Amino acid sequence: MSPIQCIHIKAAAKDRRGKAAGPDSWKKEEIQHLPLGLLDLFGVWSSDIEADECAEWPRSLCQWKQIMLPKNNLPKGFGDFRPIAVGSAFYRLWSGIRTKELASWIQGIVGDEAHGGIKKRSPATALLQPLAELQKTQMQDSSRIRHPDPPAIRYVGAADLSKAYDRLHAELAAASLIRLGWPRCLVARWKKAWISQARFLQCGFQISQREVSHISCLPQGDPASPSGLLGPLFESMCRIRKKFEKPKHGRTLYRIFIDDRSWFCSEVRTTVAVATAWKKEVAQLSLAENQGKNDFAAFGGIKHRHLLNRCLERSGVAARCLMSPKILGTRLETNRRFHSPEQEELERFTKAKSLTQTIARMPGTSAQKLCWVKGAVINLYCTQVLSKLPALKQIDKLQS
Image (cartoon, rainbow, N blue to C red; front, side):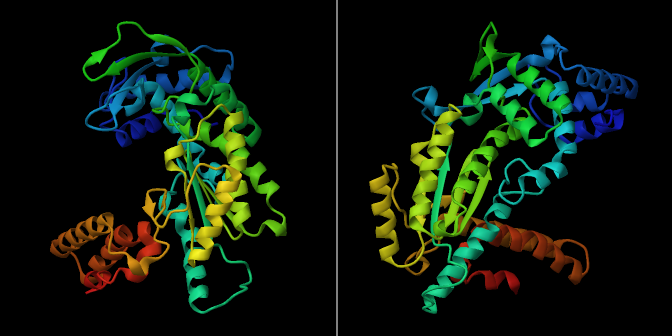
């Protein structure tokens, strides 16, 4: 890895302005305006500590604030809070710079199946091909094509992990990253930082006087933590994909977004078998499924939904076939004709219309404004709800 220079630190601090300060109270805005000589000194020191796998991180860079954010207005227990770890700004800058340098390389390693925490990837890119396949299936059903070639993607399964960052051990994450080819020197530094954590617990305006040590999970505020979580899950997905790659299992598309896993299959038995396989893989990592977020769906006639429900009951998977599953934050409609627009669609349309009016008032040529509308407004309104486009007649208002 190339040495970190002052310009890299200054640019990273500028990009991350407004982020919360860690226990040392340093903010990115303050680091951005430090003398260049001090930033160069930090870059040289970070290069030295990267070169020595046995070196210890300074105590101040291993301290984190664990902030408990309520999930609702009336939390009743710790299960109603979302733990967010905020560490030293200096450590997060170093970790962010190194993670950003690996972004293009990571894309080549994980292929088209992993999309969370990866540069230029989002839920929209994750769902683009699967939703196009599902729309193709609906068109083939309308045309009464009984045996399409290749087999039609018809069944959808999705599962979510409960507090994945707080359950996954740093040793498992580091070992997986090394097997996948991550630079050993960086993995050693991240692993050392993760197993040397000391956290101060904060809930509301109250904070613990003493730090909690002997923590070996992944801090959610570390820019490298998404990669640490991706490693074991990606290896599990590769094992599952290999297990079901024979022609008798049909076609299957796999997607991973942080801790969300989804799969799109042409065979109902494969859909349920993949869910069972994921459950075993997750158990081996000492992770836990979020049972309330297991969504399954079948596109086509009611016979396909009944078939999927029967397979789920026989396999013991605690889930039901839904008419409107939510995959990566996007609500899919398996039978759109009998549904009115969702509230999220109406809100998205209102925001897109307001943005269109703002662009219309901006200075510039008509060609420039049209380019802005295509790049911002249409993308905002359509990308996340690609599967709903046939019924969104209001989109004509934007085009005029």
